[in-house]
Image 1 (cartoon, helix red, strand yellow):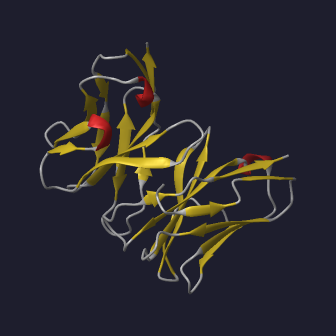
Image 2 (cartoon, helix red, strand yellow; image 1 turned 180 degrees about the vertical axis):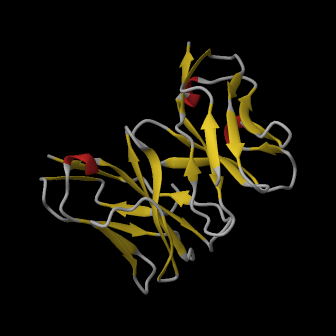
Length: 113
Length: 113
Protein backbone atom coordinates (compact mmCIF):
# COMPACT_ATOMS: atom_id res chain seq x y z
CA UNK A 1 0.00 0.00 0.00
CA UNK A 2 1.60 3.26 -1.20
CA UNK A 3 -0.52 5.54 0.97
CA UNK A 4 -2.00 7.27 -2.09
CA UNK A 5 -5.74 6.77 -2.46
CA UNK A 6 -7.88 7.23 -5.54
CA UNK A 7 -11.63 7.16 -5.96
CA UNK A 8 -13.56 5.74 -7.62
CA UNK A 9 -11.84 2.50 -8.65
CA UNK A 10 -14.02 2.09 -11.71
CA UNK A 11 -16.14 4.54 -13.64
CA UNK A 12 -18.39 3.79 -16.59
CA UNK A 13 -19.99 6.67 -18.43
CA UNK A 14 -21.22 7.77 -21.85
CA UNK A 15 -19.68 9.96 -24.51
CA UNK A 16 -20.19 13.65 -23.95
CA UNK A 17 -20.39 13.32 -20.18
CA UNK A 18 -18.16 14.84 -17.49
CA UNK A 19 -16.48 12.97 -14.63
CA UNK A 20 -14.28 13.84 -11.67
CA UNK A 21 -11.51 11.64 -10.38
CA UNK A 22 -10.19 12.17 -6.89
CA UNK A 23 -6.77 11.61 -5.38
CA UNK A 24 -5.48 11.90 -1.82
CA UNK A 25 -1.68 12.04 -1.58
CA UNK A 26 0.45 10.38 1.06
CA UNK A 27 0.48 12.21 4.35
CA UNK A 28 2.93 15.10 4.13
CA UNK A 29 3.42 14.99 0.35
CA UNK A 30 3.00 18.35 -1.38
CA UNK A 31 3.21 17.29 -5.03
CA UNK A 32 0.49 15.47 -6.94
CA UNK A 33 0.91 14.12 -10.45
CA UNK A 34 -1.70 12.72 -12.84
CA UNK A 35 -0.91 10.10 -15.48
CA UNK A 36 -2.98 8.37 -18.14
CA UNK A 37 -2.34 4.77 -19.17
CA UNK A 38 -3.91 3.59 -22.42
CA UNK A 39 -3.15 0.71 -24.74
CA UNK A 40 -2.10 2.88 -27.66
CA UNK A 41 -0.31 5.73 -25.85
CA UNK A 42 1.20 3.88 -22.91
CA UNK A 43 1.78 5.81 -19.68
CA UNK A 44 1.74 9.57 -20.17
CA UNK A 45 2.17 12.44 -17.76
CA UNK A 46 -0.80 14.82 -17.71
CA UNK A 47 -0.22 17.47 -15.06
CA UNK A 48 1.52 18.23 -11.76
CA UNK A 49 0.46 20.35 -8.82
CA UNK A 50 2.70 21.45 -5.99
CA UNK A 51 1.17 22.86 -2.82
CA UNK A 52 -1.92 24.03 -4.64
CA UNK A 53 -0.28 25.49 -7.72
CA UNK A 54 0.16 24.04 -11.17
CA UNK A 55 3.84 23.14 -11.63
CA UNK A 56 4.09 21.28 -14.93
CA UNK A 57 1.86 20.28 -17.80
CA UNK A 58 2.24 17.31 -20.10
CA UNK A 59 -0.03 15.89 -22.78
CA UNK A 60 -3.24 17.06 -21.18
CA UNK A 61 -6.18 17.82 -23.44
CA UNK A 62 -8.03 21.13 -23.13
CA UNK A 63 -11.16 19.15 -22.17
CA UNK A 64 -9.29 17.98 -19.05
CA UNK A 65 -8.48 20.11 -16.04
CA UNK A 66 -7.20 19.55 -12.54
CA UNK A 67 -6.81 21.31 -9.26
CA UNK A 68 -5.22 20.78 -5.88
CA UNK A 69 -7.11 21.89 -2.82
CA UNK A 70 -5.79 23.42 0.45
CA UNK A 71 -5.93 19.99 2.13
CA UNK A 72 -3.66 18.82 -0.76
CA UNK A 73 -6.09 16.37 -2.31
CA UNK A 74 -6.46 16.72 -6.05
CA UNK A 75 -9.22 16.27 -8.59
CA UNK A 76 -8.95 15.58 -12.30
CA UNK A 77 -11.96 16.72 -14.31
CA UNK A 78 -12.61 15.15 -17.69
CA UNK A 79 -15.35 16.68 -19.83
CA UNK A 80 -16.98 16.09 -23.23
CA UNK A 81 -15.76 12.53 -22.93
CA UNK A 82 -14.87 10.56 -26.03
CA UNK A 83 -14.39 6.83 -26.55
CA UNK A 84 -10.64 7.39 -26.73
CA UNK A 85 -10.57 8.75 -23.19
CA UNK A 86 -11.13 5.24 -21.86
CA UNK A 87 -7.99 4.51 -19.88
CA UNK A 88 -6.49 3.93 -16.47
CA UNK A 89 -5.80 7.21 -14.69
CA UNK A 90 -3.12 7.20 -12.01
CA UNK A 91 -2.33 9.73 -9.38
CA UNK A 92 1.10 9.87 -7.78
CA UNK A 93 2.49 11.96 -4.97
CA UNK A 94 5.92 13.01 -3.78
CA UNK A 95 7.25 15.03 -0.89
CA UNK A 96 8.41 17.92 -3.04
CA UNK A 97 9.32 18.00 -6.70
CA UNK A 98 12.29 17.33 -8.94
CA UNK A 99 13.97 14.02 -8.18
CA UNK A 100 11.69 12.97 -5.37
CA UNK A 101 10.35 9.46 -5.56
CA UNK A 102 6.74 9.29 -6.71
CA UNK A 103 4.32 6.88 -5.08
CA UNK A 104 1.37 5.76 -7.15
CA UNK A 105 -2.22 5.17 -6.24
CA UNK A 106 -4.16 2.11 -7.46
CA UNK A 107 -5.70 4.03 -10.34
CA UNK A 108 -9.20 4.76 -11.63
CA UNK A 109 -10.33 2.76 -14.63
CA UNK A 110 -12.52 4.93 -16.85
CA UNK A 111 -14.68 3.32 -19.50
CA UNK A 112 -16.50 5.59 -21.94
CA UNK A 113 -19.31 3.87 -23.87
CA UNK B 1 14.63 16.04 -24.35
CA UNK B 2 14.73 12.97 -22.18
CA UNK B 3 13.44 9.61 -23.32
CA UNK B 4 13.78 5.91 -22.56
CA UNK B 5 13.66 2.94 -24.88
CA UNK B 6 12.84 -0.49 -23.59
CA UNK B 7 14.36 -2.86 -26.07
CA UNK B 8 12.00 -5.80 -25.54
CA UNK B 9 8.24 -5.63 -25.35
CA UNK B 10 8.03 -9.18 -23.99
CA UNK B 11 10.55 -11.38 -22.16
CA UNK B 12 9.87 -14.96 -21.16
CA UNK B 13 12.06 -16.89 -18.69
CA UNK B 14 11.81 -20.09 -16.71
CA UNK B 15 11.48 -20.01 -12.95
CA UNK B 16 14.91 -20.02 -11.32
CA UNK B 17 16.74 -18.56 -14.35
CA UNK B 18 18.18 -15.03 -14.60
CA UNK B 19 16.14 -12.06 -15.73
CA UNK B 20 17.45 -9.25 -17.94
CA UNK B 21 15.20 -6.37 -18.96
CA UNK B 22 16.95 -3.84 -21.16
CA UNK B 23 16.58 -0.07 -21.10
CA UNK B 24 18.44 2.70 -22.91
CA UNK B 25 17.97 6.32 -22.06
CA UNK B 26 18.53 9.61 -23.80
CA UNK B 27 19.34 12.68 -21.75
CA UNK B 28 21.47 15.77 -22.14
CA UNK B 29 22.58 15.53 -18.52
CA UNK B 30 22.97 12.85 -15.88
CA UNK B 31 19.39 11.79 -15.32
CA UNK B 32 17.41 10.24 -12.49
CA UNK B 33 16.31 6.79 -13.59
CA UNK B 34 13.78 4.41 -12.11
CA UNK B 35 12.26 1.01 -12.64
CA UNK B 36 8.62 0.54 -11.74
CA UNK B 37 6.63 -2.70 -11.79
CA UNK B 38 2.93 -3.12 -12.49
CA UNK B 39 1.27 -6.40 -11.58
CA UNK B 40 -1.99 -7.26 -13.39
CA UNK B 41 -4.83 -4.95 -12.36
CA UNK B 42 -2.61 -3.18 -9.85
CA UNK B 43 -0.93 0.19 -9.53
CA UNK B 44 2.73 0.99 -10.10
CA UNK B 45 5.31 0.06 -7.50
CA UNK B 46 8.82 1.50 -7.35
CA UNK B 47 11.48 -1.21 -7.73
CA UNK B 48 14.59 0.95 -7.57
CA UNK B 49 15.96 4.41 -8.24
CA UNK B 50 19.26 5.82 -9.52
CA UNK B 51 20.27 9.38 -8.68
CA UNK B 52 24.03 9.56 -9.43
CA UNK B 53 25.30 7.95 -6.23
CA UNK B 54 26.37 4.32 -6.76
CA UNK B 55 26.08 3.05 -10.33
CA UNK B 56 24.81 -0.35 -9.15
CA UNK B 57 21.43 0.11 -7.53
CA UNK B 58 19.75 -2.56 -5.46
CA UNK B 59 15.98 -2.65 -5.30
CA UNK B 60 13.23 -4.67 -3.77
CA UNK B 61 12.53 -8.36 -4.38
CA UNK B 62 16.13 -9.12 -5.41
CA UNK B 63 16.20 -6.82 -8.44
CA UNK B 64 19.11 -4.57 -9.26
CA UNK B 65 20.11 -2.26 -12.10
CA UNK B 66 23.40 -0.86 -13.30
CA UNK B 67 23.78 2.65 -14.67
CA UNK B 68 26.29 2.70 -17.56
CA UNK B 69 26.85 6.21 -18.83
CA UNK B 70 29.10 5.12 -21.72
CA UNK B 71 26.33 2.85 -23.02
CA UNK B 72 23.42 5.09 -21.90
CA UNK B 73 21.86 1.97 -20.41
CA UNK B 74 20.05 1.09 -17.20
CA UNK B 75 19.27 -2.61 -17.49
CA UNK B 76 17.30 -4.42 -14.80
CA UNK B 77 18.48 -7.84 -13.61
CA UNK B 78 17.59 -10.54 -11.13
CA UNK B 79 19.65 -13.70 -10.60
CA UNK B 80 16.72 -16.08 -10.24
CA UNK B 81 13.16 -15.48 -11.45
CA UNK B 82 10.16 -16.31 -9.31
CA UNK B 83 6.63 -16.90 -10.52
CA UNK B 84 5.52 -13.79 -8.61
CA UNK B 85 7.85 -11.66 -10.80
CA UNK B 86 5.47 -12.01 -13.74
CA UNK B 87 4.36 -8.43 -14.41
CA UNK B 88 5.00 -5.44 -16.62
CA UNK B 89 8.16 -3.44 -15.95
CA UNK B 90 8.68 0.20 -16.86
CA UNK B 91 11.96 2.04 -17.21
CA UNK B 92 11.49 5.69 -16.34
CA UNK B 93 13.49 8.92 -16.57
CA UNK B 94 12.69 12.23 -14.98
CA UNK B 95 13.71 15.77 -15.89
CA UNK B 96 15.36 17.54 -12.98
CA UNK B 97 13.22 20.66 -13.10
CA UNK B 98 9.66 19.43 -12.98
CA UNK B 99 10.00 15.85 -11.83
CA UNK B 100 7.28 14.40 -14.02
CA UNK B 101 8.11 10.85 -15.06
CA UNK B 102 8.73 9.83 -18.66
CA UNK B 103 7.89 6.16 -19.11
CA UNK B 104 9.20 3.60 -21.55
CA UNK B 105 6.63 1.45 -23.34
CA UNK B 106 7.07 -1.37 -20.85
CA UNK B 107 8.38 -4.93 -20.93
CA UNK B 108 6.03 -7.73 -20.05
CA UNK B 109 7.84 -10.45 -18.12
CA UNK B 110 6.44 -13.97 -18.23
CA UNK B 111 7.80 -16.66 -15.91
CA UNK B 112 7.28 -20.29 -16.86
CA UNK B 113 7.21 -23.03 -14.21
